[in-house]
Amino acid sequence: MAHQSDHNELFQAARSAGYAFDARDRELDSQLAAMLRKTGAAPVGLSDRVHAASAALLPMRETAPQLRFVPAPAGSSRQRVVVRRRVLSRVAMAASVALACAIGIYVCTPGGTGTTMAAADPSATDAGWDVFARDHYSYSEMAYLLETDTMTLDEVTGEMSRLASGTDAGM
Amino acid sequence: MDESPSKQELRDMLQKAAAGDEHAWRSIVDAYAARVFALIRSQCGNADLAEEITQSTFCTMAAKIGQYDELGKFEQWLFRIAMNRLRDEMRRRKRQANPVEHETLTGLIGVGPGSERDEPSTDPAQLEALRRALGQLSEADQQIIYLRHSGELSYKQIAEMLDQPLGTVLARQHRALKKLRELMGQRGGSAGEDEVE
Image 1 (cartoon, chains in turn purple, brown):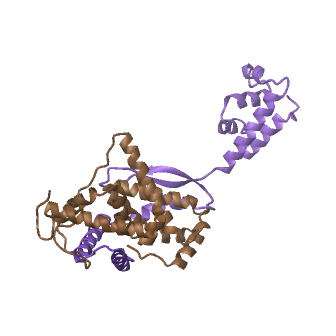
Image 2 (tube, helix red, strand yellow):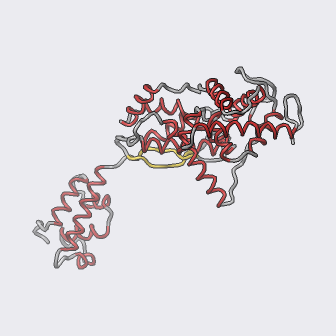
Image 3 (cartoon, one colour):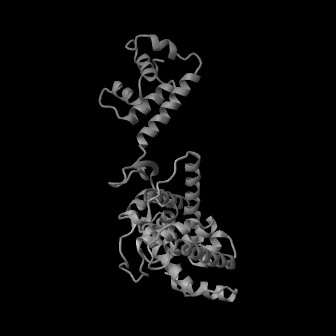
C-alpha cells in the first residue's frame, strides 16, 4: 500500500511549494484514511459475485454471454446484474437456416403451389402434405409430423431442402 | 483486501485474461474489486449501488480486455471506468428524481475507539462530523480524497487518471485538508469533543 510514501510525498511537495504542513494535517489525513477504509469495507463474497458476473465476457470464450438479474444476497434490496452463458443449439440454428432457405426458394419459384395446397387436403399427396406442414407448423412440429421412422431434425432439414429444390417428383 | 500485484504479475494476468483465462481474471478481480467497491461506496454511500457499479465496471473491463494495451496505466483505466459509471448513474438518478439511499456513517462502523488495525482512534460522532465536512468540499477535492484513500491510488496515478499535473493534485489535496480542518473546527469536531453540527 502506498499510503506512507504518499504521506511523505504530500508533505514534502507541500513544504517545497511553500505550504505550511503540520502535525494536525497529518492527523486529519490519517483520520480520513481510517474513515474511508471503514466505510468502504467490501461485503462478503464480493469477488465471487463480480467474477461470476464478468468472467463469461472474457475474449475467446466459446459461448455468448447474456445478461440477467440474479437475486441479491439476503438483506439486500436490489437485484444485481450478472452474466450467464447461453448455450447455442447448433441443430436448431442449422435447421432454422435450412427452413428459411427452403421457404425462400419455394416462394420465389414461379407457379409455386403453396397457397393452393395450403387450403387443400394435406393428406392428398405427400408433396401437398409437406407444403401444408411447412406453412402451418413449427419446425419441431414438422419433424414430428414427418416422422415415420423417428426422423431426426437433420433428416427433416434434408427433406425440406429436397422438396424446395424441386427434386421431388410429386411437385 | 488483497495486495496489489507487481507490474510484471499484473502484465501476465492481463495477457492471460485477454486469452480467456478465468483463473487469471479471478486474480485480477481479487486484487481490485474491493478497492473499486470502496471508492464507489465512499462517494455514493450505498453498498448495493456500489456493488452494482463494481460488477458493471468489471464486466466492461472483461469485454474490452482483449483490446487493452498494458502500458502501466491499468489502475487508472480501471478506476476511470468506475468513476464514469458512478457519474452516469448519479446523473440518471437525478433525472429520475430517484436519490440514492445514503447509509449514515454511524450505521456502518463499529461503535467505540480503535480498530483491529493500527489506526487513529475515532468515535462515531467524530467520524460523522468528518464525513459531513467532507461533503462540503468541492466535487473535485472530494474526488482526490476518495481516489487516494478509498481507491488507494498514488498521487501520480491520480494525476494521470484525471489528466492533471501532479502539483495540482497535491495542492488540491493540501487545500482540502485545510478546509476540512476549518470545517471541523467550526463544528467543534476536534478530538475528544462530541458536538456534531
